Length: 266
Image (cartoon, rainbow, N blue to C red; front, side, top):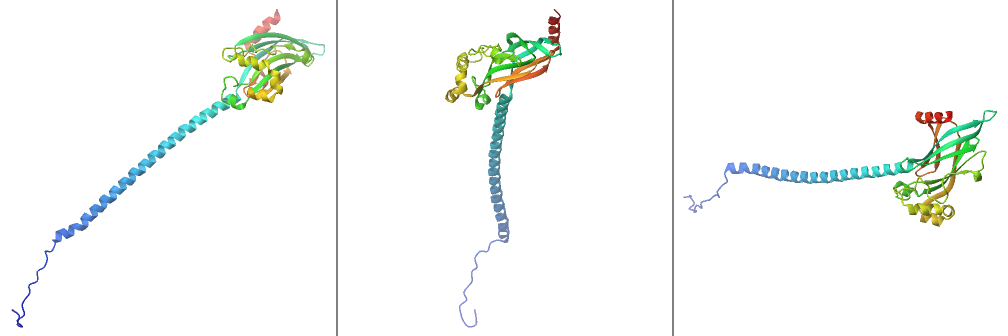
């Protein structure tokens, strides 16, 4: 008992945590923090992969669409720039005068159909040697040609007549009858009714813009191509799908040359 007689009050201390428990708290918190961080990183990575996967699909679809557009564009360019053979021509006989200049030329013309098979044959004798090939030409709208429209997908030509520098056009030798469907186009692959109306109304189409628009015609006009003609050469009349007439010069196939030589000897 204390000397001054005061009562002694006992002091009770609360139960103190064990040192091992205190020591484990930081580790537990660290583990929880790591778990939370890992979960967050996993979620972020999953979201990242979803975004990347979506972008990859969009990119793949864009590439497929770009390839399709390129294919369509290449097809349109091909259709706009291709040519078709209308006829092949050779000189079967040529007379020359005292000065050595040709005075008369005989031509064999073979008209070709859409499959480039012969559909008609003509033989012409013209004075001189510069031959003019006259045609009626119908050119359609560019879009119709580019998209291969079934009726207006290419320029069409009616080969009208042949004349020369010494033979007036009005006296030219006829090839296809004006107003009728040319043999080269009178096939089952093209609508015959449209062709008939086209050639029956050709001169109206030339001068009536409203009618031309109704038919999808860009240009309707007469065209003539010409060259000096000589033996031993193959000439080809061609038409550009989106253009007009051409007179091309090709090497004469050996077999054709032999046939012509044999005919000339008879």
